[in-house]
Image (cartoon, rainbow, N blue to C red; front, side):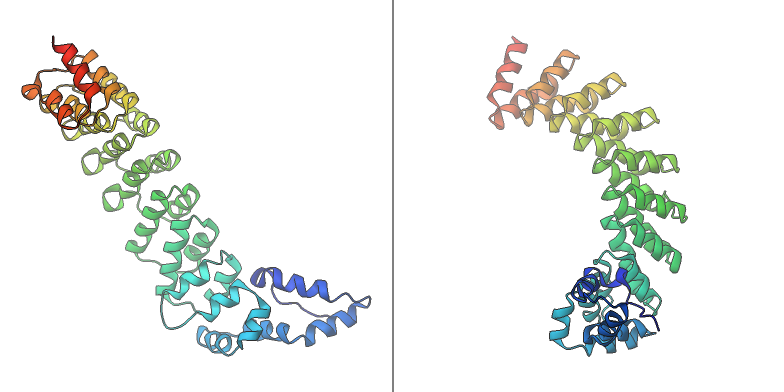
Length: 317
């Protein structure tokens, strides 16, 4: 009878190493060697289990010396399985679709599957995420969390898989879009917008976040799609000025941002942080240097931003 080898997808390079050692001219001799090899027998016993309970029992019975010789990340992960639902992460972190499928076939419980989906989404493992979605049911909350994490970390392909599965792109006030904008993931932002994410969610938070974090390309996309440049009393301009993003300030002003909002607070904030280039831009665009009883100069002085103080002084005399 022809020898049927253990799954190479499950056991990685270990089985290939055994094959290299079994250099027999006669194929039947190699079959006998492999069939009788004690570590191959361990793999067979593991693969023959039918439930997670049997799997845990089988794996926990393997002696430490055999485990060391096997040197398999999958077996190490399986040995870590206990009653704790967090053990699913140990398994998924092998990155093997075959390994996850192996345990799903044996009844991986729902909490383990949820943890696995969250990990796959946050780390960008599309294949495992797709497998889990196809093999089990997840609550709306679990799917929303997966989309949020995939978006936050910039994993567009996982986002596609989740959206194709029917996850609500507007969940939690379009949190996926808001955090994709915050962390600067342009492609993910476009994807989410194309699928109907609310550009005005949470008081135009996507634009506010992108401006505050310095992502000009995302600001342009959001403005082109109708984001409110005046959101939250010119929050985008105020905080882009504070953080020193001159190019974003220029973009926002070109799109109609009110330079005098909140008594020229943008100028005052830029001065307080010593953002000389932004101060120059705002003054050139007509900001009121005397606003709030010369707050720009006072705040720059309090922060020991002497170049900005001199610049403001030269503009007042």
